[in-house]
Image 1: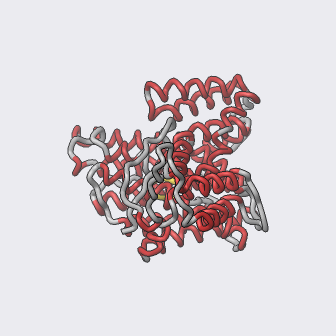
Image 2: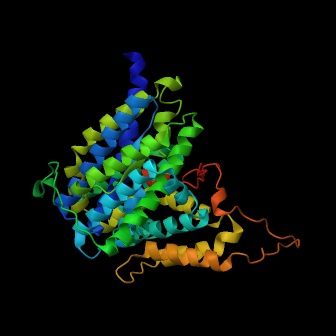
Length: 427
């Protein structure tokens, strides 16, 4: 029993850090696309259940520490997109389609290769544009509710220095204390877990604004770096089974309000690293325990939603923004790392961050279109000369993406920091 204690404790910590670090982002995203309180609580519960079931199934089946998480960058995308034609039912329809696309990527490897072929600067710039609005929320909160936001931001900064993985949970705890001291109390809301079905509807605008960008962000910012993290610890599980499991779980969880589940990246290291167990062959116990713990945490989804409702909206957005600082840093790094792709990446970033809605379609899609157009327009242009008169080195073509190092995420231990600058071969 004592041999089980270490990996089981690591699994509990993995689940707690993953949940506490980014559930506020999930709730903010669901509310932004039209979910009411019950639908948002139901979505959070569905994501917890899907995370847990898939993690337990994959861990027991493959004996590999495969940690599953919800798509935090995907939730940030929902915040940036906002309400679409058809309301929340249309968003649910987009969640279904996104889940089916992830499943298709597992069934048809060329689809995954097409995603990997998107130029890294364009993908990074789109993600950075999606994240920017939430990441400036802590600054807005310091101006609007300084007595509540100040202690949370200070706690985050100090823990980022001395106990990095607890920075966001610590900031969240301080925010909860501030809400409890200044709010009306939990007696005014229902904190029981909620499971509420929403019949999906189908809207072209929602497909373009949500379904495709959500699929892209989930694949490029979660599943690809998640595989890289596992490979860094010596694990190479078949990607096909992971995509099939997470895709089907996302599809089935969508009518309950869940937007997407995927491989974890940052919290994956908590279960796959040596701190989980000195024996690499026993670390799967940590990921299975994390899955079981996430199911238990799902019971508290109603309470988590109630806390969000009782707080000033900008305060919860501030905590969510702190959780995404690392993801923003990594996305910007990926966007500007290659000199020949910077101009197109900046165009992508500016259009995505603008919040433009055109023909009912959100800014993330138009950012991709604008960046792709600039990439095509500038293709073949001579490389700029350096100060020494030498031509700048040519970058890789989109189809030549090779395994590279994973840029360390910044502060914030949640899966929002999972958008690491990782490039993976399409093979």
